[in-house]
Amino acid sequence: MRGSCLCGGCSFEVTEPVTRMAACHCTQCRKQSGHYWAAGQVSDTGISITGAVSWFASSQTAQRGFCPTCGSVLFWKLAGEPSVSFSLGAIDGPTEGQLDEHIHVGAKGDYYTIADDLPQREN
Image (cartoon, rainbow, N blue to C red):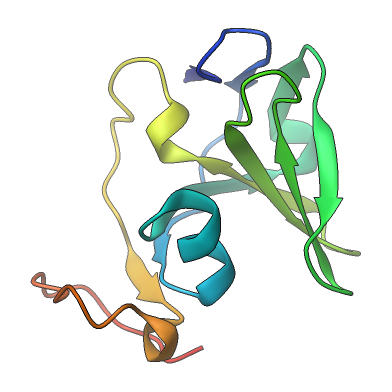
């Protein structure tokens, strides 16, 4: 599975199985994307990143990686965890996967309804 930012300056390849695909409805993901953020998760060794990535410490425990040229948010990483989440919307072509769950639904926007039967976690 390969992905890239809007301008093509940053790309990545997922080389190991994705461990989880989730839609995050937290306030930070909504602010960065304009809606909710769909992400796949893989071990740190299961992704290869090419090009410049800027990292923003969005909290004391997590950071978000984005293209410094076009601003596409591509990655999310929890400090001390051996995994990274990547934007499913940045995948070039099919993901060959399905969402597993919705997370942080307690913070979701009031302008939409989650209309599928996937598990929903408050946090």
